[in-house]
Length: 294
Image 1: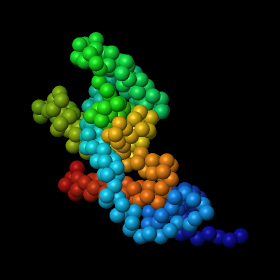
Image 2 (image 1 turned 90 degrees about the horizontal axis):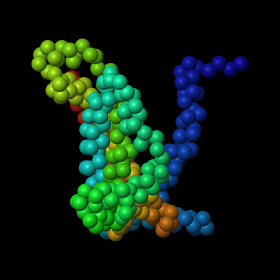
Image 3 (image 1 turned 90 degrees about the vertical axis):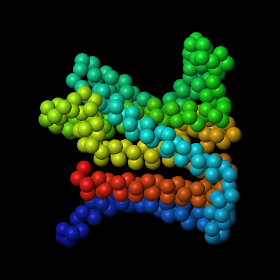
Image 4 (image 1 turned 45 degrees about the vertical axis):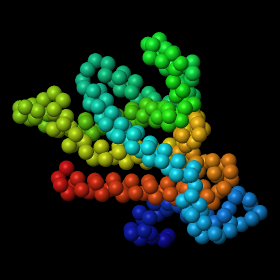
């Protein structure tokens, strides 16, 4: 019976997972990287034709790409700060020993477990011309004609953002709750003696100690905002007039509607570089906070 070296034992345990990741993640990623330098339009009778940097040159003059990139960056600028700050406030509110507080936690977390398809359809009904939101505006005499939430280029993207925020609040609240419950109560008692009480104790104690969680939520929400697709697909289809089209939805259009697989891979490569940049920034910031003692 052959004896396996102790040095090889960890790799034997890792091999099944690495084999699956190689087949389902790494190989497709390398294939997509190769296709971004070719012309391939989903024709199995024709092999990919190497064209070098032509797809990247096409990106530079593609107005729809730049519009989609602008919408995605706008998503990052607006959605991410809200999903970093608002869930922390909610977590602080529900992190109290009050009667029925578990029901409030469940209520805030409920949108997380709802399918995005169901949530998108429900919000589309709310945003309809005769939907609940416009009916409420008419009842309050704020707008008799209602607001074209999903049919106006001025409101469509922000209406979709609202759904993303609504879905994400409970998820990030749970992450913050884990961090809040790890903070010793002695710190707050000592802070109260020094005059740090009420909401000031959260500025002096909670926020500094929660900084690793803040960075984690910032990166997770930024990556999620960069990859937003379901909300756009269900609610607006990228319209009206491409006002709510994001990078992922543009990749979907090029790959599965126009069958321009290689060009879609080129756009996907740009997305990968954006997400990689966000991850590197996060690592740099986290190391910086560790060096200064946070």
